[in-house]
Length: 260
Ligand code: CAA
Image (cartoon, rainbow, N blue to C red; front, side):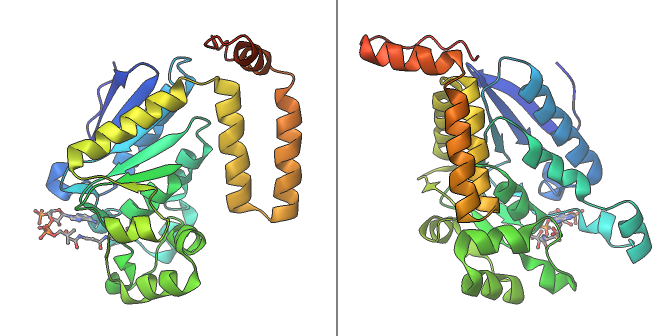
């Protein structure tokens, strides 16, 4: 196993990789070295041939309290622009297998953005979401203005981003940002692991295609998306798993996925 400094990795259930952000002294602030480790861990799970879904979580106190403000404080326009600061965060969105964010505690600024880069958000009763960048004299830089607006609509996103006010896990769920809110922090992580295990139990080709077509809906327009989905649906008739799944149904058997 690779030793990381700012994250922990494990395989708590068959086919499920867990990544736990572990920088407690800074409430899991997402520094560049931390994000590099996170990208490496995601890539490693996504390419090991065994992992079908990933759970990304933090501590009970903080999923992540944002990008690292101390790292950003001295940046200039030129240095940020030249290095395309924060661009490496987008690596996460290229992960072919589903990632479930299990959010407890603070998910602020870049922490909220990181959760929104995942495919599903589950949260606990004490989750605190927000985009407080305006209070620091800046704006969201990790896709927050785009993803929050798509998730909860313009008026709410404007209010949150312009006031910097936090919102609760319950609100996140009510507004459709999070798909579920659990009763305790532990239940949140357990629930995410359980859902990840369900997903990892299906044929990997269909799971990848399902993630891809939902992302098409999220990112593109409706007419293109419907066509894209239909073409992907057609393509899946070329897979072994489609034959395995439909034959098993007809024979009243449990499918043994080939992932091909
Ligand atoms: N970056 C760097 N360090 C951070 C941090 C961050 N985002 N958030 C917390 N920390 C550090 C604190 O500086 C403190 O360190 P020291 O002990 O060395 O002083 C430690 O974590 C504990 O934090 P607090 O003492 O502040 O804990 P608290 O319980 O009193 O408050 C909090 C918790 C309300 C979350 C508060 O820490 C806070 O407001 N954090 C910043 C939240 C924020 O503004 N996030 C957005 C960052 S900007 C961004 O993310 C840009 C982008 O879009 C990419």
